[in-house]
Amino acid sequence: MLVYFVAAVLTVLHGFAVHFTYQKVREPYMDEIFHMNLTRLYCSGDFSTWNPKITTPPALYLLATAFFCGAERYTNTLLVPIAFLVVYRLRLQLFPKSFAVADALAVMSVPVLLHSSLLFYTDLLSLATVLAGVSFGIDRKHLLSTLFFAIAVLTRQTNIVWASMFGLDTLVRCYRRSHPVGSLLRTIARLWSLVLLGIGFVVFVVVNQGIVLGDRSAHELKFHSMQVLYCSVFIVFSSAPHFLTHLPGLLRHIVSHPLRQLVFLVPIGLAIHFTSIDHPYLLADNRHIAFYVWQRFFRRHELLKYLYAPIYLFAITYALKSVRTVPRHVVLLATVALCAVLVPAHLLEPRYFIIPYVVWRLGTKTVHLWTVVLEMLFNVAVAGAVLYLFYFRPFEWPSEPGVKQRFMW
Image 1: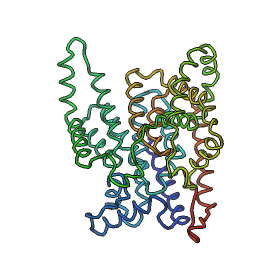
Image 2: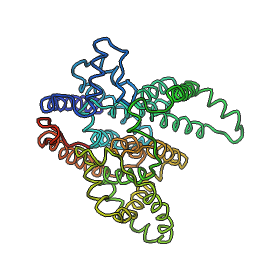
Image 3: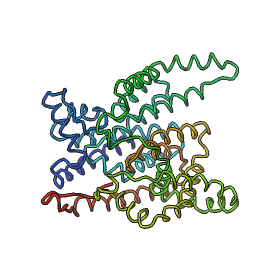
């Protein structure tokens, strides 16, 4: 079948890309320093050591220990066909007549995801396991679904939110007004493994005295509602070709309801005023694109941030209107899940937007194949530009002469 051929080609291409990454960036870079060092301890048989700078559970390290000791970046090459096939499978489940192969390719080429997959980062494993949990849950294979959700949580703790969203969606779909209590109890009984996962997570939070495992001072919970607005802009940027096809209709909608738009601008303005917070990492680390976006578009003048309110409104309107064929309760649950994942996060980090974006993207209906092709070309162009800077335009900090720093998301 075509989908398996494409998956094989993607795997080979990703393997070559990882090989090239090893040639250009031989030593562990940025967060890889913590991830790889702990993985290599596991490879040597030391499973008792934990680096207090690591914030997430060790699922990725254990997977690399089983297959790729000393060549950890290839772990994501192993995950590429799995992630692609899971996205393809879920897309067909949601839209049987969609361009599922093309849509899956578009998701896999999202620049932030593509870049992080070439390094020893958790994003691809996190995405693949969350989507697999949803996909097998839709097929009512609840034990298998819970297994993947458990791996997702052992990759990144906040994935419990997406598991909970799916569980609540199942309760809503199986609810019967004629037998309200009975239908809910039967559904909960079918979801017993997912319920146990939730209970286990609560026990973990109580015992751990929090969600984060390490480096707690840099990952304190904040009420950062601006993250939702930043994510809406990320959605527009990452789906630019689709956005352009919706632009005329969006303009007509906004112009025809001016009073409603003014009302919606009020909570956006309040969010901008009270929750535009910057993390010390965002202000100090000039290796990230977010650093330059923040410096040039937010810190030049105190009032500048308020001018973006109409852009946020436009982006949110686009995001919601694009999923109008999705049941309203699913949109509501996904929105709540997005807020639960993003709002407590202090740091503006584009990688946090990957799963929310993919969940949204899988809920949009593709009308024309050419828009998906343009989406892929756009993704490859953006990813290529950033990877060019990463590979070929390193720089040095005066405080660390001889150490190459590199641009990334």
